[in-house]
Image 1 (cartoon, rainbow, N blue to C red):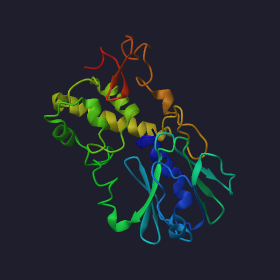
Image 2 (cartoon, one colour):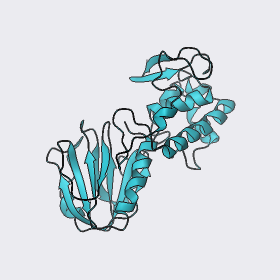
Image 3 (cartoon, helix red, strand yellow):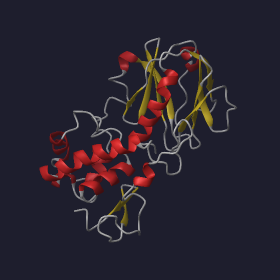
Image 4 (cartoon, helix red, strand yellow):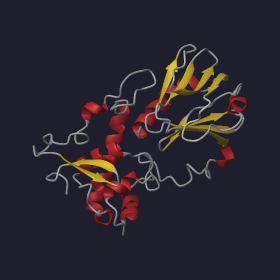
Length: 273
């Protein structure tokens, strides 16, 4: 699933195309995605001018001129493509917007776990997908003190807590694994045992990993490709994720693999405590 760096990469890529531009054409697939498309989506968007897109967690938010917000979630396998002229839509292209000037934004989602929503600007704080999200890990609210408050008394693993979007928004399996490795913290450690020394390593590790991944355009494993067709090069910088059975880049021992809450976890038992 695209995580914060991949979604941030997409948001930045589509901003020049959408900001200040009017929507001239719309394609809405008949099957819907994870949920049906909002009713009257075409009539609500056509002819409207878009504002600058933003990101909240793993969601892309595009303001439109009728004081509404178009929300796009890429799901498990979704991607956005940019075309300089009207494309020939393919089987898995389920939603597309054409803009004045001829450019098109196309949402492709083979597994159809993504979704599109449209809601009033006034509802942004109460929207069911957004209202319970934790702070952005790259914002000033995500501090050592905040992390310690969230881990206090929690018996879940620290890896599970980092994946809980109500605690911190946007982190997924890849970047949780990489941050824990950088901080030297075992993904199996109970969250309540994260005292100040470990929290002071983990918070900057999370932020460093995410910033580097954004600079590299995200991580392309199977599905993520940047809107212009480029791959995300952070995959070349992965130190622990996906390296089961290989030698640890720090100590040379063998990287281990376990399952945690249905997700695969990679770690070094010598470097991570």
